[in-house]
Structure formats: C-alpha cells, structure tokens
Image (cartoon, rainbow, N blue to C red; front, side):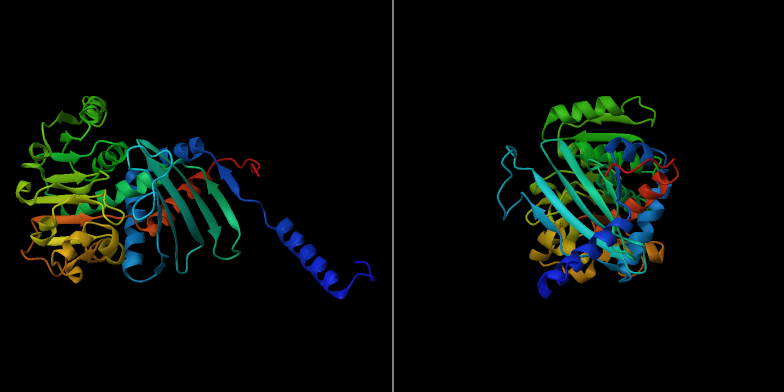
Length: 360
C-alpha cells in the first residue's frame, strides 16, 4: 500500500484486501434448482425421511437444537401481501442448528392461493460460509411437514383405521397422504374442502392411482370425520372446523394447518378431552398452534407431550389416561430442526451426483 496514505486509510485498505483473500479461498455455495432438488428427493425413500426427522425431533426435545423465534409475514397482526386476495398468503422464515452438527440452516417458505415457493440456505457450522442454496420452491417444507404427520400417525394411529378423513385438499394434503402411505395400511379416504372443486380434483388424482387409494368426496366435514381412524386437517382456517363430537375412538387427529397466531382447525374441546395431546414444540404451539386456543379454554400446556419425547420413549409414555390413548391430537406448527434434517438429506443425495461448476 502507498506509504503516503493516511494511517486509517492504509488500515482500511488492508482489511479490505484481507477480506478479499478470505472470500477467494472460500468456494462459492452450490446453487441447486427446483428440478435438481426434486430429482434428488425423488431418490430418497420415505422411510429415510421419517428416520431423519425422528432423530431431529428427538434431539430438539432433548435440548440439543437451537431455534430462534419464527418470523411470520403476511398474517395478522401484520398486514396482507399486496397480491393476497384470499387472505391466506404467508411467508415463514425459520432457522436452526443442531449443536455438534455440521450445518446451520435458514429457510423461507411462502405461499397462498394455491401457490407455494421458498428456498433453503445451508451454511457450515465450522467455517460459517454458505454451502448451498436450495431453490426448492417449497418442496422441502412440504416433505418435512408431511413427515411430521406420518411420524405421529406411526405412533398413535389405530392399526387398521376405517378410513382417513382429509379436511382441506390443497398441496399439503397430497404430501401428507404420500407419507401416510408409508406408515398405515389404510387406503380409504374421505375428502372435504370449503372449495368443493378442490376435493373433487384430489379425489380424481387419488382414485385408482399407483398407491391404491380409494377416495370419495364427503358432503360435509362431519361426514368425513365420523368413524375415521385418522383425521388430517390441512387448512388455513381461523375458526374451528372439526368438532369434538365427531371424533370416535380410537382416532388420531393430525392438526397441521394452525401455524400462526389466530389460526384454528379444531374445537378447543378436542384437546381438552383428548387422552393425549402431542405437540412438535410446546414453545411454538402455545403461541401458534391449536394449543393456543386450548390453553385459553383452561388446558394446561405442561400436559402436552412433545413428539420428540414420545419418539425417544417409543410411544405415548407417561401422562396418558388409558394404557393406550384412544383420542390423540397431534398439533404441528413446524420446527426448524425439520428444515435442518431435510436439507442434510437433500445435500447428501445431491453430493452423490457428478459435480458441476457452481452457478455463482
């Protein structure tokens, strides 16, 4: 550096030069398209996804995962997005890392009106540098959310459910059924949606397909739920759809849709009367899940078990009323350790393919 420069300018230029060297030696992150991510995950068996998520939930409940607060945009108390004519537009920003792991992850998942998008950023815990940009279009979020529901069903669903009730027939309903097919023999499905055309479209997709589903459109949410061994709710509802009186034991309710303040799919009484309430995260569900409404109605949140606790104990463990709980509610808000685990799986599969130059 020129000796005639003032000392503070020489120091500043030296720092800039050192930073440039550091950037030069850090390889740029790999950028993967939605097509590449989808192809990679298409090669991963559902059982592998379930096993990875089970390990993540267990680690979370054992206090070995750091998860900052979620940022939720587009939903009350914040204003709507400018293109959100239906009021269901939302973007969630989640991040986490497993202590002692190799990566930390930041994820944006957005969608509304039947459109989903997003990306996942993966960084090294050792160098702090970005490793990959997964332009997944929301696919990894769909898969990891569905895997949580299937894990709960694998622990708590009846061995031979009469049928599966599906309340809400959007994109996530399809992924949930895809994962449920790996953990239950039941292939009878009754569908209901506030938009009947969505239910009819999903029934047409499922009926006679390779998974062997036998799907019918129910005339009401009650008709779908009556007699079901698995009740799956995947809606953006802000008032209860499913009534406690419709649930006939034995049954597990997979409540997936409530993931921000004010959302609700179940009567609070369903949780209060349940033999067992399972949550993905107590801290999140008490603010964002079905649990928020049950607590307001007098339910003690400490009575809820975390999914990771149940997995670690191999089932329902302590606190259930009968020896095997016959009315179980699973409250899922989506925990960022799921994003870490699904990103690790995706990157591991992508790394098995021939390397190509980074797009950066």
